[in-house]
Image 1 (cartoon, rainbow, N blue to C red):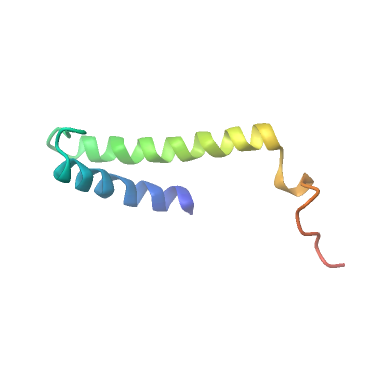
Image 2 (image 1 turned 180 degrees about the vertical axis):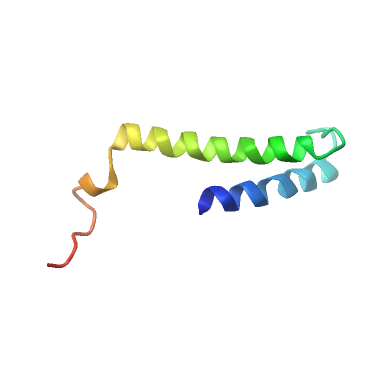
Length: 70
């Protein structure tokens, strides 16, 4: 769910910043830069979660996680 939210909210945010601060970034005209920006946001989130899982392990094995009530 978070990946979808970031993919939808990220490109308009970047376009807003590009409008306010044109020296920071420039987008080419068309739909392709918008799609590429959204895919980049999704990829960053996926890679971040994969690295966290690789380093920390699955959440179910966390000693500090809540245990289900039996």
